[in-house]
Image 1 (cartoon, protein in one colour):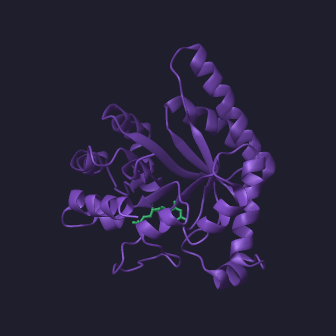
Image 2 (cartoon, rainbow, N blue to C red; image 1 turned 30 degrees about the horizontal axis):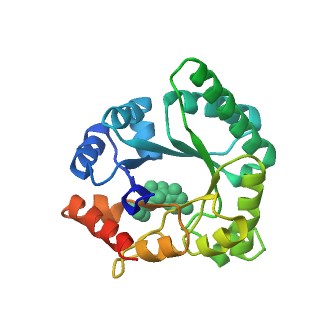
Amino acid sequence: MQPKDRLIVALDFPDLKSAMSMVESLTPEVSFFKVGLELFTAEGAAAVKAIKAAGGRVFLDLKLHDIPNTVARTAAVLAGLGVDMFNVHAAGGRAMMKAAAEAVAKATAEAREAAAGSGCQVIAVTVLTSLDDAALRDEVGLARPLPEVVAGWCGLALQSGLQGVVASAQEAAMLRARFGPAAVLVTPGIRPAGEGMQDHSRVVTPAKALKNGSTYIVVGRPITAAGQPREAARRIIAEMEGI
Ligand code: C5P
């Protein structure tokens, strides 16, 4: 995979017009976009369809966390929408993750029969990059060291039939070593050297994330809030190409 194909830009916008104007200004440098809770709540499936129509790939970041039946039914709808990737919380457990994977496999098989095709990847959110060891222990109530929680959830996600996880690139090297080349590691909390951390606790530069074994880096504000987003994206891609 080319470094440029490893960049997913987070379209954290309140409406489709702003999101699509960002997609236009980043195309063709960027081809993979993340639709999150804000944009999906405002615009729904239209956001996914508009990005797909513009030739982009879509990671729908809704972080599903519910009982297996509810997640399976939602997963089938998402696969039918044609999203390229979506996520569920690993904390939902094995049955929930298996239900998501099975629903997507079934929807994909049905789509193939209808000659539509679908290659939807499902990944599990581990520990949010906004949390650190102390918050995980004292607020969330998980006493094990943070990397162990992330590794435990990654193992469970892969055993449950998911393709990979969302984690910090700080944990990517450990996950890559433990789970091998096939695991899809999607890492947000990316900050080019010298930029502020904003609401993240665990940040990594684009080049270091790739060196650590990230499959995809997710970058939002360092690109979308830059004076010249296309230039910011180019710099991040060049940094990844330079390793
Ligand atoms: O603007 P920024 O680069 O901080 O955006 C990061 C994006 O990654 C946000 O859209 C956020 O919702 C997402 N994220 C995530 N999982 C995490 C941390 C951030 O999906 N653990």
